Amino acid sequence: MGVFKKATNYYIDYYLPNGRRKREKIRPSKKQAKLVLKKRKVQIAEGKFLDIRKEERISFDKMAKEYLEIHSKPNKRSSWRDEISIKHFSHYFGKKTLQEITSLDVEKYKQKRAREVSPSTVNREMTCLKTIFNKAKEWGKIKENQISLVKLFKVQNARLRYLEKEEIARLIQACPGYLKAIVTVALNTGMRKGEILSLKWPDIDFRNRLIYVLQTKNREIREIPMNDIVFRILLKVRKNPKSPYVFCKKEGSPYRNITGGFTNALKRARIRDFRFHDLRHTFASHLVMAGIDLKTVQELLGHKTFEMTLRYAHLSQDHKRWAINVLGHRLDTIWTPEGKKAKKLELSPSLELRYNEDWEGYNEAAKSPDALPLKGKMRYRLSSANTCYSLGGVCSST
Image (cartoon, rainbow, N blue to C red):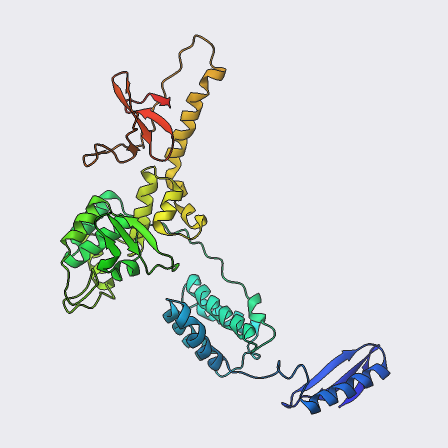
């Protein structure tokens, strides 16, 4: 222990109880440096030195185990993913303590893993690692978290693969019995695979035609209306007296892994580059292309933020153009010379109207309660707006 001068400043040099050498920069005063050193000696002797707690060592493996048991498993449905990530961390960082793992070490880990897996997978692992260090700081294990400065890879989550009508028909036909019902429910409700496989009979209200999704990704209960297709499919599913699950095996246990059967069905249907989760994209995409507003799509999908639903916005461009054309027709009287007849506004050719026999209407347009004959034609209102149009192509407004 001692006092020394470097340039114009004085430093004190001493050892902590754990054997680690420490140096502190003091103001340009030798007298003050001696006083601070004397104070540090007393603090160390009495066990009151403030930095002793900071220098306590805890191995990464020990902290990761505490994180799994105390935080991840009780609070996260995807705790299994954290377990996989931690196995990779432990293999790479070995027996290092939290204090010994620097941001440079993590950057090297990122580069190594990027050569083995996709950037999105690396990002998931980095998120797990950052959470471990955040909890370590929150629980008083460390005072500073340098890992928080590590940035994630920029990933383009632009994938929006959905099935066309012909592909849907081929896929349904290629599915075996048990899988056909599961796929059909996914296509008509937008439910996630886990939500469907964990669905129980008490979660289904046949009287009000509602499905209550209790085990959601966001841990929020979601209500999904059943259309006629889902209603008939679920009525045909035989209840297993040994199990409360809707989709289960003969012995009553729920299906856990349907990847193999789904992959084989895709091969038989000659559909490539498609995952089960893309059935959810198919559900949302066809809703948007049918003219349903994005806010309703968000509620049906259970997206926590509207930004997640905006990925489908580009699918509704034709409907946006049609709405702008309606506005132009409405305001046409302002600048059209008096006496000149307003041109008829044709609907966008891409706005296809399909008749639905169940409720005597069209899928893209809901019949207005106050529908009136308009030159021998019936007037309809879009389900997501108050703008009326006739099936013959002449636009009008209520």
